[in-house]
Image 1 (tube, one colour):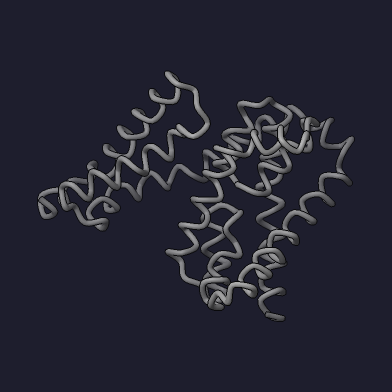
Image 2 (cartoon, helix red, strand yellow):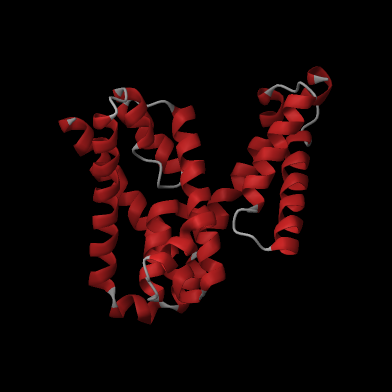
Length: 230
């Protein structure tokens, strides 16, 4: 099975798109936050690989080409940001301060939790850049000596949590300002969370898109400094 599929460039792409389509149809029917298409797709892919004893490398051989579209897809998020440029100008100080505080708090809280529970340094370093896009997170992980596989898992979980429970948390803590909602989701759960911010409104989408960029830049600066004192 693995040898046959290894020769198929389209297996990984096909199973990824098909499972995501199933997840999207399920969400459209029941409209529950937990029924996130990406989460459903991940579960279905794992089930298929496990049931048919297909090696991950065989799946990844074709699926890796989907990642080529991540950059242009992220760039497309600049469209709502451009449409809300006036809103950005009116809140530029609050935006920068909020994102900076969010990045710093994330790193310090994670380090604090790791210290309390005596988590190994390597595992801690691997999780520090989890709230930014995969490309940036992997670059930071490589620089500080983390484990790439753990970082990818952390990034995936952070994105899914933002998309699934992010809006509910905003309601619980009564954050109703669109700018604040977008900044919170974008700085905590990168592009996956931003996909949910798009559903909340154009202002949220614009601010969340901005958060992805600024959070990525600040993480590249803050994480190595914190690791240096760890």
